[in-house]
Image (tube, rainbow, N blue to C red; front, side, top):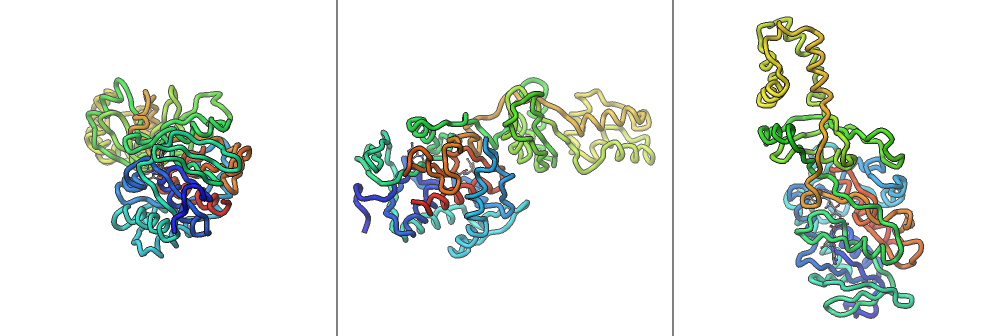
Length: 407
Ligand SMILES: Cc1cc2nc3c(=O)[nH]c(=O)nc-3n(C[C@H](O)[C@H](O)[C@H](O)COP(=O)(O)OP(=O)(O)OC[C@H]3O[C@@H](n4cnc5c(N)ncnc54)[C@H](O)[C@@H]3O)c2cc1C
């Protein structure tokens, strides 16, 4: 039997990845749960994730793959519910999956299978799911919480905020969770778009437009300004796909770097991370000095890219005309290409939102607000942001699981 609106143990606002998983887990533990979402469909972000196949976890998920002002906060939840634990649920639901690369696990068929598994988990355990519910406000009501909506009021002993970040407003993302945090006096680390393509003006934009669609393997890292805040994490070097687009640069290595990049700072790109270009060009010169420099470069890089780089930098002539010093300088420019993005594509295309409810306000084992017993924040709304590659869903599952054990 479904609980009436006044006798709920837990109300969850937001029925995406974290909210649905939480509702199923808490209901399985015998809690009377209702999840409310303003969207018409549940788990829309799951549906569009991983190119429609949902990269639902990463077998290597570890705290170092997450950004937060307090990097250690995520350790406890991640330990409490690991990728293996989620894989066991996926296997039990009979969903086929495969590892694509770098520990990234995807559904063999459609992401819809993950949504169906989560919804079936909720329904099977008796959690009520309500779509099309517009929340007007939330208030503490004695020992409980009251949620006022366009479909009447709900009252519950616990309130879980799982409304995600601001990325992709077109499918229902809002800053709702941050407003609730502020209402209860909690700090919010400034949200910003992350895992997002970077845009450029001038020369680089023109070059990117000419080369739109060309992709290579490249290493990319953000270059923090001298004296950048001590709380800024040290940017890793990401080696993965790299793509020229009509607006600028994209591909996994750029998306990953965007989470570490700040306005006004450059990013550093190695266009040929496998080959030492100086040695390769020198070796070519030794056996075929009459080869044009551009042709030789086009043996390592895509030909269109080699052509555009040579035009841009005025690199002409045959290899035999090039001294060691000149070859070395050209190779260094390509291994160490620094460009300054003018911005990013913003929340319209960002896969996640960096920042969010300050983890200083939360208990790391339960996600409960220290100063407001009974109030919880889980998933992307919290200041814990994963790398690209299944880490963000793993955080959604792990933080939801932590809270579900505590309600
Ligand atoms: C295009 C794209 C692809 C992605 N691919 C991957 C991937 O393959 N692997 C990976 O790990 N991560 C991926 N991500 C990130 C991942 O989808 C999110 O990190 C994850 O969904 C966060 O879960 P969540 O439950 O916190 O938030 P969400 O899944 O965003 O759920 C939030 C829910 O809250 C609801 N909501 C919002 N505001 C309100 C409100 N005011 N009232 C009521 N309800 C509200 C929304 O409708 C939504 O249903 C991708 C993201 C995008 C945008």
